[in-house]
Amino acid sequence: MCIRWFHLGLLAYFMCFAYADEFHSRFLLPRSVKSTKTNSAEQTTEYWMTKAQSILADKLEESSRLNTNRAKNIILFLGDGMSVHTITSTRAMLGDVSEKISFQEFPYTGLSKTYAIDKGVPDSASTATAYLSGVKGNYGTIGVTAEVPKYDCELSADESKHTESIAKWAQDAGKWAGLVTTATVTHASPAGVYAHTSQRAWENDAEIINDGCSADVNVDIARQLVEWPVGKGLRVIMGGGRRNFIDASDVDEEGIDGKRTDGRNLTAEWLTDKLKQGASAEYVWNKEGLWNVDLNETEYLLGLFSSKHCPYHGELEREGLSDSVPSLSEMTEAAIELLSKSEQGYFLFVEGAKIDMGHHSNRAHLALEETAEFARAVELARELTNEEDTLIVVTADHSHTMTMNGYPSRDADVFGLAPVLADDGLPYTILSYANGPGYSKTFSKKTGRRDLSDADFTDPKYKYMATVPLKSETHGGDDVGVFASGPYAHYFTGNYEQTNIPALMAFAANIGPFANVAVTLQEEDCKSEDENLL
Ligand SMILES: *[C@@H]1O[C@H](CO)[C@@H](O)[C@H](O)[C@H]1NC(C)=O
Ligand SMILES: *[C@@H]1O[C@H](CO)[C@@H](O)[C@H](O)[C@H]1NC(C)=O
Ligand SMILES: [Zn+2]
Image (tube, rainbow, N blue to C red; front, top):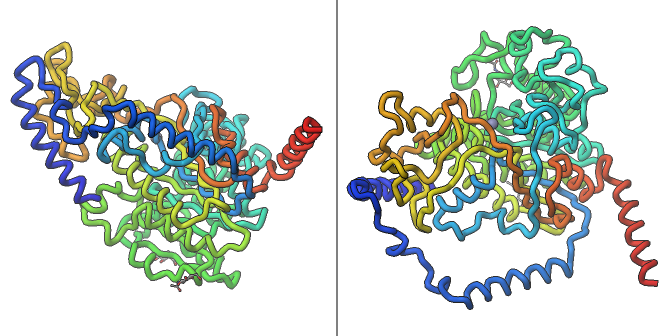
């Protein structure tokens, strides 16, 4: 794929040059006229009617055999910050706006409301509590109710304020559970699987002390992963963040300093704990190590592939890292292979974490490459599992402020300029943000709006236009998509609270607080239907 990006990039490069000349005139040639991608069939009524007939046939087929099997396995794919606009723009990047990406083929789609209790635009911590525990919390907090304000040392440690995640419900039902992320494994989203804290930044003990709390009263997220029951029970943990597991006086496998101040090596403690139980466990820190693991014979796997967050997917190839760091798809494949050994099934959380990070820096190109890789991981999961017994849900925690705009032609390079100049006689990009560090690429103090005619859009790190200056672009408040396939996927339609997601997944698998309650309700529904028939 990266080779293809390169070609796309070159194409964009040449197109920009071709464009630059034309920018001297006020109006540009409408490129759609010359479009090579236009499908002539699309110009007929018949094409659209036939397409609609086939969608209707699919709908009739789906509604005639709703999948009401119990979900043995649940996989939740979380595209961090993957707004609907991000998905649409990724589709445009991949070729044509009419082409779908894997999970958009899922039969059932809904919209989830992402707000936190105290904020209309949420973060990844409060939303993780919502889509994993079914409870809404405050901005910055994870796995605790909204009674706990951010930074509250005392309430953070109060177990009566802790929520339960679907990973616990799965484990209590005898299923295996695991997580895969491209962020640190202690970052806000994956921490929602196993941790409880009033401050998402408490990934290691030093952070707790910096915030004026006690690292004895408050247990940092890395320690919770290794010591507390849900984290301890996880069969698969893969992502980045080795630094949070070792002391500041030590270095990791790549010579990077640790972050802890308690002198512990939590990686070693994790391994010792498993081996003491007589379990087969492996710790790996690079791709070669992962390939050497016999997944059929391994019961617990910890893979920490980076000191901090994992690199961007596009950078694996561009920076020669693809031999040392596994991609999201590769981690997902290994996780499913290991977890598939569980007779009672499993719950797997997979996060494409860096979609969000690309957007925060206004680097739309990186964000969209991440989204494409995320879609690939979903596709792979669907190939490796069976929709008769595996519920796959794909969603986002929150949106971002990027839009795709400016009436580009269908085959335009989405990373380039809109086809017509703005009212100030200057070009503007198809992708742009409401705020963020791209502001300085957009405006100059002296001359006002900058002329982007010669901007290098082939640079994947290019920071796109932003209206308001901010070091880090903010999230957006709009609802995000939920795409479902497998048992009870049809329950995921509608526009609902994000907290509905774990409830529906738990219902489908008949686990946790939504197990028997929901079944009773359903039986009553059937009874009343039967009575109606009589
Ligand atoms: C921590 O423990 C792991 C697993 O035993 C080991 O591979 C690693 O080298 C240790 N790191 C340090 C800094 O001691
Ligand atoms: C692992 O088990 C599966 C299913 O039993 C089998 O098809 C596969 O060949 C095994 N792989 C290895 C490396 O032993
Ligand atoms: Zn974010």
